Each structure stands twice: as C-alpha cells, then as structure tokens.
Length: 102
Image (cartoon, rainbow, N blue to C red; front, side, top):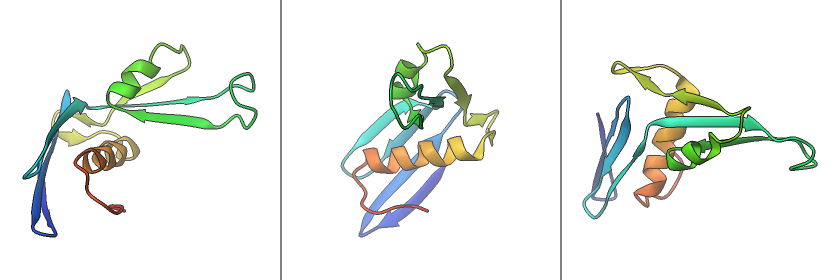
C-alpha cells in the first residue's frame, strides 16, 4: 500500500495480485492488476511498434495470440518492475493527478 500527498490531496494505492485499488479524497478507482504488450505487424501499423496496455485494456488485448500478459505483483511482491510502474502510472492518471511519477 502506497500513500502520498499532492497539493492537499491525499491518494492511496493498493497494488495487489488481482486488482489495483486507488482512493483519493474525491474518487475511487479499481482495475485488474495486469500488464500486456504486443508487437504490431506491418499489416496493422507501418511503423511496427509495440503496444502496451494496463488493466481492462490489457484484458481486451489478450484476444491477440502474440500478446504477453504479465502480473505485476505476485504474493505481495513486485514480480515485474516495468509492469508495476505502468499500473501505478495508470492508477495515478485515473485519479486525475497531474504530472509524471518518474
């Protein structure tokens, strides 16, 4: 569980194995604690980049066979750092906080 104060607004984030739960003084947000990434093919995008998603968007992306799904937290510990940072950024963004967290 993480908590921080920004401009007299306190937020708390609980990133668990199943769900990420976020609370601020004015909003509550919950989404699945999963991270997905996949490479676009040249048929989808001429740049052939990588697409990343978190939460419900990651669940939607799982229909593609080449999608890699990752649980960011397993048994209370960070399992994948890149996925963990992505879900925390999404939680902060969903709460409406301005700026980047690193």
